Image (cartoon, rainbow, N blue to C red; front, side, top):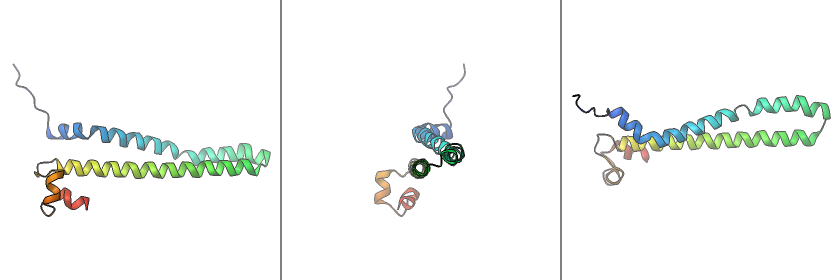
Length: 117
């Protein structure tokens, strides 16, 4: 008979943070795909705009790429905030004895309270 194996501290921390990490991964993949927007822009400009000499097409393509840049930056910001919150909850839940509730009362002794200010 083998004794029951308890999960390591790292595995249990990763299991608690799994939803945030999955969301951050999805944001990273989407932002990575949006990095290809300028390449598609250049292909479209050289394929369609130069042949047709249409300023309307050029303006629309430019607005589309600028919109992709804005969406990419919003995704990067959201990913950073999500990972920051995951790190703070990980610190608060570690063996320091701090929790979100106690960190408000004892801001000087809890590392998570100092980071979230």
